[in-house]
Image 1 (cartoon, rainbow, N blue to C red):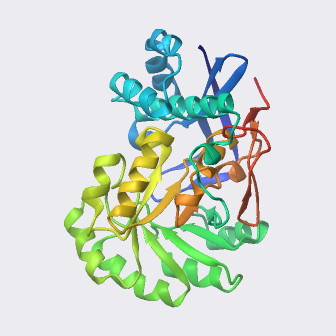
Image 2: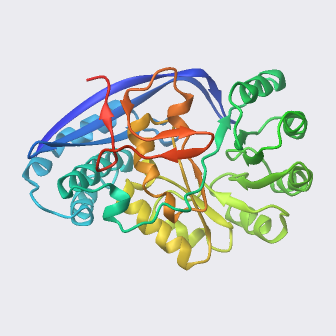
Image 3: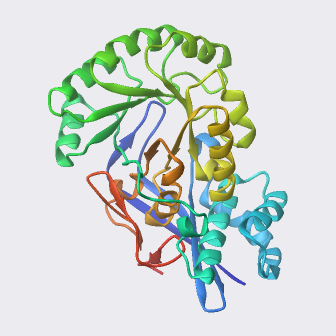
Amino acid sequence: MKVILRTFNLQLKHTFTISRESYDVQPSLIVELQSEGYSGFGEATSNPYYKITVDSMKHNLEKIIPFIESVTNETPEEFWLKAHKLLENDMFALCALDIAYNDLYACKKGKKLYELWGYSINKNPKTDYTIGIDSIEKMVSKMKELPWPIYKIKLGTKEDIAIVTELRKHTDAIFRIDANCGWTVSETINNAIELKKLGVEFLEQPLKADNWEGHKELFKHSVLPIIADESCIIEEDVAKCHNHFHGVNIKLVKCGGLTSARMMISQAKKLGMKTMVGCMTESTVGISAIAHLLPELDFVDMDGALLLAEDIATGITIKNGVIKYSELNGTGVTLISK
C-alpha cells in the first residue's frame, strides 16, 4: 500500500471567529492510500487549541510509513487498533489515516461506506450552517448570504443575547448556540432562559472543558439541553459526560477518525445521550467522511467545505441542509488539486 501526504492551505470565504480565536486560512493534511488500483482519501486540519500543526501530523505519519505499507487485508477496525498504538499521541494524524483506510477498504468492496456498515439513509439529519462571531450587522449579512434551515451561532461576547435577538428578526430557522467555553455557570443558566424564547434548540460547550462540576449543575438546571464538545475528545470521555451533558458532539479529528467515532456514537446511544458529529473546517474530503455517519446521528454540523472560498475535492454535496452522496464508492471523494 502506497502512502501520499499532501498539505493545503484552505482559504475561507470570511474571517472565522469563535470565543478564543480568529482565522482566515485553515491548514489541512490530506492522506491518500493507494492499493490495487484504488485510492482512499482522509483529512485532518490543524488546530492551535489542541497544539496540532500540519507539520506535526505529517512528521508522525512519515515515521510509520513502513507499517502502513506492510498492511494487507486488515479490516478498518483491526487497522485502527494497530495504528492507534503507533499514533496514540496524535489523534489528528490517526484520523486522516483512518478515514483514508475506510475509504480505500469500502472502494475495494465495491460499496459506499454507509452501505458497508448496513446503515439506512432514509432519515438523515440536516446539517446546520455556522455563523462566526462578528459585528451584529456582519452576522446578519452572513446569514442572509446563505438562507438555511438551521444555523449554528458562535457566541462568547458581551452582546450574546442582543446578537441572537437581532438574528431572529431575519429568519425562522432553528438556532443552535456554541459558546466554545466562553461562559460561566450563571451566564449559561440566565442566557438559556432568554435563548429558549428565541428559538434556540441547544447550547454547545458553554463552560471550560474541565469544569465538570459546573456542567453537572447546568445538566440539572439549564432550560436548554447542553451538548459536550471540548469536554468530549476520545472514547473514554463519553462515559464522563454522562449526567453532565445531554449529548456529545464528536469530532473525527479529535477522536482518531471514523472507526473511533462509531464506537463513541454507540456508547453515547447506550447511555441515552444525543449524538452529534461536528467538523473542524475540513474540505469535502473530511466532510464526505462525516456524511456516512448521518444515519446514527441526532444532529450534525458538517458545513466546513461551505465556509471555504475554494474546495480541493468533490464528494458529497449539500443543498439547504440536505446531504446528497457521491455516486462513487467509499466516501465518494476525488481530489481536484494534486
